[in-house]
Image (cartoon, rainbow, N blue to C red; front, side, top):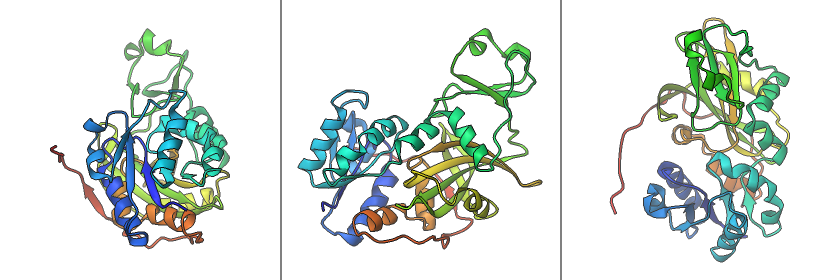
Length: 318
């Protein structure tokens, strides 16, 4: 089996690429971590990886064949997607890659569909005993309320609405917006939880990260925190049918009354995953052991609690 890894749509994921490189070389010193991007010249991760390939837009009908050829030509045995728009098309074509001995780190098509539509995600959370924000009838609203698109990503088209004057016609007539209870961030703390699921669809690691400060939709300052969310989520999400690899779940937690509110699931490596890696949740290691070495992964919770991450600006000069 080929042991090179391809991280697609790498963009600014410099820390993710470096983490995979460090981990992969412990097992296979000659193996490489490649990346793709639509514009490699402007992608910082391209300069850190062992080679970056310019690719078509994911919606292009030739995208999958292009990725498959890149893998065959460059000894790539694993694909790690990083953006939401790739997930459906890669899940739809997972068997094609499997037939060519290339593992795609993406969950089943059914689970991806649950995650990509927040209406389905809400039903999933409730089925597993996790409450979601209460829906609000936009024709008879109560304030404050929150509105977001059912298929949104990158924290776009979000609306915190405090009064009837702010509930504009444009917002009311947007067919994609879901209207719901506003979760007060002065009462609730926001968390991203990085979770790894093995081949058996069972969780192997759970790392909650408090989102202390957000910038451009991604965590800028964060703190790992084991309890109470680790046990809470293990009890409810020990097994997810069709789920493999890394996913990240967004939740709110009220520490006064232990109320947990599920918000969304991103079935991929999140932008803040490097903090989990630094704390000892090495999901690249799990992927390599499972899919390159055929090992069974046991549940682990020996990562570093209360690890503070403070991100800062840096640059690549070429």
